[in-house]
Length: 193
Image (tube, rainbow, N blue to C red; front, side, top):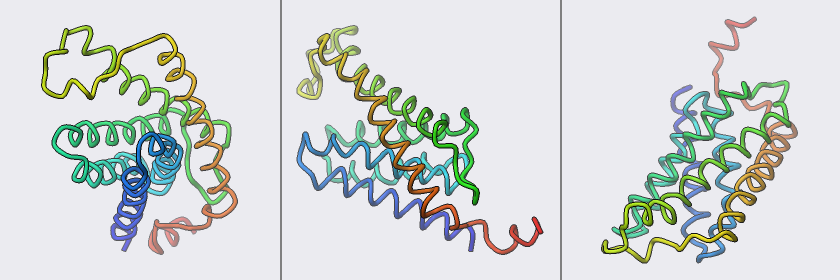
């Protein structure tokens, strides 16, 4: 039963990430990064150590299937990588989703760092890397953007700001509504008594 509950959480949150990404036209879908970050953080709190990675992979795979051949691999990779960053910083900041709640400041910091890392990674992949290796001649050149100071500043500001908002929203949701939901099952609850 515990495994089924974990799969349900991962599938549900991955599907919500997919819906937030695919059904809004650009640039509005980029504003939904907060939604993706919140559901990745909730996945990490419900399914310890790998929840965000799996939810990011599910959301990325579903989005990649509808994105087309040129964007699909990038969409999957960066969605999966975002989940890895969330799981990594949740572990680094020692955040545990318990019945007592989560530490709001730690969760805000973890999400700020994870969204900064995914923002810098994707910006480097689409703006800095192509110029470094002189990749302007490849077929999907329209995927790449021209780097500028304004764009760099915006990435460096909006990445952590988005993560801080997502961390606050996640901690509020967890502490107010979700902390009493357990997917550990009766067996582990009886062992602790």
